[in-house]
Structures are given as C-alpha cells and as structure tokens.
Amino acid sequence: MKKQWLAMGLAFCLSALSLPAQAVHWMPLGETEEGLISMDRDSLKRPADTSLLVWEKVSWAKPDAAGHTGELRHREYDMKNKKWRQLSSYALDKKGKKAAGSRKVQEWQSFEPMTSLFTRARYEWDYSRWRGPWMFIKSLPNLGRKWFNPDSLEKKGTNSYQVWEKTVMKNPVNGTKVLLSQTRYDLKNEKARTLYLCTFDEQNVMTDHYAVNDVWTKAGDTYGEYIGDQLAAYYAKHPAKVTKTPKTAKKK
Image (tube, rainbow, N blue to C red; front, side, top):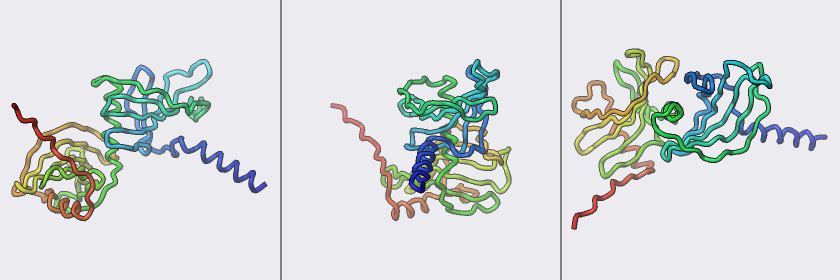
C-alpha cells in the first residue's frame, strides 16, 4: 500500500511540473482577436538572456460549444531569432479552471517585429528582468536604494562594465516607484551610458520600457548613482561574462 501511495504521489508531482504555481499575479495584457490575454507574472523565466518562458491565459468573450471559456498555455519566446513555440496548452472550464489539454511541444513559428504578438512578447521579456536576481549595492541619500543583477554583469573591454540595475525610489517620481536600467560604465573616463529603461509603479506593474542613449558623468552624478568602481571590484572577485568588441577588418 505504501509503495502504491508513493507511486501515485510521484505521478501527481510529475504531472504538475509543467503547470504554473497557484497564480496570484495574473496581469491583463490587452484584448486581441483571440480574447483577453493575461500573463502569470510569477511564471516569467529567462533560460537565456534572449529567451523567455511564460504562462499565458486567454479569456474568451463567450464559451465555445464544449463550454470552455478560454485557454491556459505555456510558451517559449526566442527574441533573438524572432520565433516562438507552445510547450503545453489546456482548456479552461466554466469556472476558469484547467480542463483537458496537451503537453505536446509544438514546432517553432516565426513572428515579425511590430506585430501584436511580438509587442506582447517584448513586454513580457522586458518585464521578466524585474525578477532579478538582485544584489543590494548602495543607498542613495534623498532618492532611494540601489541593486544590481550579478547574472547580467558583463565586462566590455579593459575598463568597461555593463549591467542591469534596479533603483527603488524613496518617493515615487511621476508614478514610478521602481526603475530598471541597463547601464554601461566607462571607468577610465568616469562616464556612464544608460541604454535601456523599464519603469514600474507601486504595484510592480511595468508602465513603460524603451531604449535610450543617455551619457552622464561621475563628476556630475548628483545622487551618487555611479557604481562603476563597485562593479569592477565585484567582477574581480566573480569573473563571469567577457564580451570583446569585434575588430574591424583592415582595408587592403
């Protein structure tokens, strides 16, 4: 009896591996031709920097002939190669609970930039950076506190480091409580270049995400946000990614 109970328990655990955890953060992403699309914020994972795993839910305006009200699906997006595939999908019953489905991994499909699918995938991909991991690095007087993502730290040349960082504002600024930024630090010239920004409100909902090209200096850093020296010291103890700039071919 004990072996049978263990076998049943193991089977249940294996069947649950591909299902999302109890979703408490379903976030609506907007209406599409399929219906209302939502994502489980806590399911966002980045197997690689350019890829994303996420659970999505489609809620239909009307049930179908079988009484299903939508679909729960696990998707993988490859942002570098602009393709996606479905890893599993399940119908939702009248109460919105998971019904029958399939765990068959589908073939990769391509998607084009500027389409609604690509726009949604990009939003989810950028949003996933919010999950970190984050390591506290310093307090910013009169502004807030700052963290950096050690997994994103890259050395770009002899004295240059690039990283994703998070600033939690002491007081929201224009509705922004959390600011994620991708920044490259040039230690030799004591400069920094902000490359990308993601803004979040007090409920950790991403309100905007966009590329920038903002150059600022250590000398003109009013709030003490420059962390190039601390990143170099951390990298010296934890060397990871090293990205070399390709050499330009000489003309004959």
